[in-house]
Length: 223
Image (cartoon, rainbow, N blue to C red; front, side, top):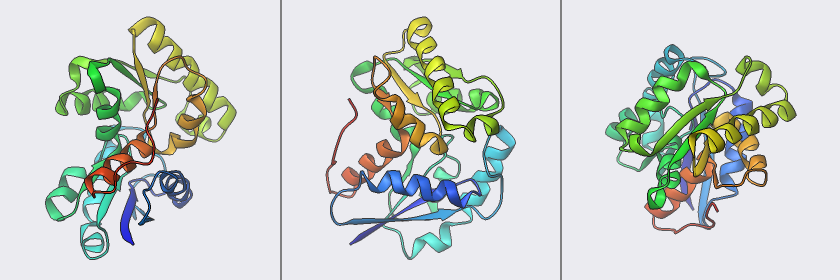
């Protein structure tokens, strides 16, 4: 059994468990997955200072991961600590933003990122640019209201994300939508049947990347 670790860069063990549950549904046969939660930082990453703290926390996980993981997925949308882990480990390391943007940009599509964290818009745009997807990024749309309050009310969260996604489609001419955030994984899945274009779920996208990278192929694809 090949062992993948999903690293949650925030400090919420409940969020780790949710993301691992979603990721496991997309694993190829012969793979197992466990979660690892950041020891320091914030329970929800909502600004660039917290993103930098998360990157440091993820980088410090390298020694613990080195002897156990055959692949690592960093499950926060800014991909904090991905480069540091990639340099420290001899196994594939995937960031959910990079994997989601790669899928969204397939065949030259223009895509939008929809998220709950307006203070991370600049960081998301910079990540797209650094990955070579700047020209295909149609826009970044954010929900209204405090992210923490939305996260505590799932129906309200889904409705707010849907409104923002529909604006991206109508006003930004987005051809695909990424729901940008590891903790938004369940909401992203719910939105796939509600929107008229492909909806990219970052955690499954990262699992598909890892399946292929480790030679197992992919169980399923986004529409």
